[in-house]
Length: 551
Image 1 (cartoon, rainbow, N blue to C red):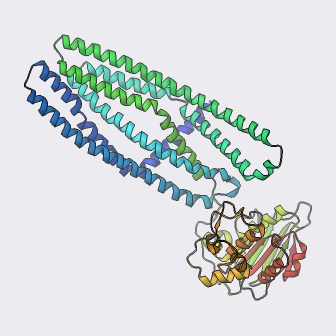
Image 2 (image 1 turned 90 degrees about the vertical axis):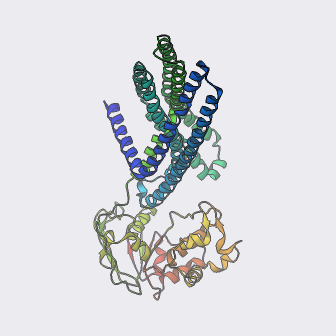
Image 3 (image 1 turned 60 degrees about the horizontal axis):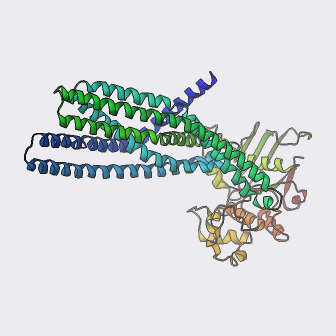
């Protein structure tokens, strides 16, 4: 019963996703289908020409008739070829649209996914777009050809003789049976996809910890894990292959039955004088072409499973829990002072250690004040930093900027007035140094850039970089020292002149006395922001005006 319910749920999800895909691309799908209809209709020239040629030779008519028929067929086939090119172009255009649409959807979705539900390997689901593109091209061409040529061909057979209606019904029944035999193929392909990504995730883990693996006796573990994952993949692929092979056997059986049955029936009708020799040959051409299309689709039915699997995998990313936003109508931040903003923490609980006496936290920071929040553990430090920055919501109590609950503020506005450095995540993205600092923000001036580089003591360091601000940073920023990395992150946080600065940690990655110089600048009374340093280092109290202990 549980398996049946799961299958029903999956079928509903697939139908919903197919409907969504059709609604988004219905215009171009309709255009491609119209091209296929034109191709199918005018492709009838081949069996009709064959029929007339056979009849021509049977009755010893003048060869000029042959030249005429062949010329007409050549002209129509050129016309059909033009529409096939248009169909090919339309399919390629659809692939482009899929890539652009999905790429932008990923770009909009990723920043809003809750971090607790996100895994870095989910980024690899982007390549499902490529599978979807390839599958779409094959599905559109093959399926439209089968449907259109099948309908037209079966109609023409019935016009030759009513007995051929039996073959039409038999063909439809056989196609239905082949479809039923495909049950379980989607589940097997999904399982195969999961094992594929499990293997990718393992090698990503090895890559992220390569130095540790190289410095230890880890080869056996890496090999054993890879072997286990490969075994799971092979098992899943065998399950999928059993579905494909039974469909293919059914397709071959269909070809044997219909070919021999049609030839025998047509021969009998010819002997009875109810069918001409030309119609017999034309009927054989029609059924052979139709069965060829069916065979092509059945042999590539795995493409259908890949397409549906890609839809499900991509939809999984889009349905991940998003950042919790309780407000249905956001408001703007009022009265932003030139010296910073007011930060109010009211009865926020769950921050202290279990053994601490403090049950909740209530504190008010006035514009321009510099505070330190002293924590007992690194995890507590990160938790408080994320809460104060508005990345997470407190389980109880409220956090306000200038009297407004941060949950009611526009997220982009919060990011614009608040600068944040999370020392737990010291990583950069693969781009130029300039892009890592500015994040492509158009409102930043050259003066802003020069000011922040001097503020974090990066100006002289950049002069030694090979390409200055255009120096490419490799994936993760591994080619930069932790000191340079946190200076770049600090420059990114400060370049927009935020009204609130939150530091997760005391910048211990930066060596002394440079660290003390930067901390003094951040905590200076004349600095135009409210600053909060969340740290486990009690010595930070010498840099700030006030402190609160959570340990």
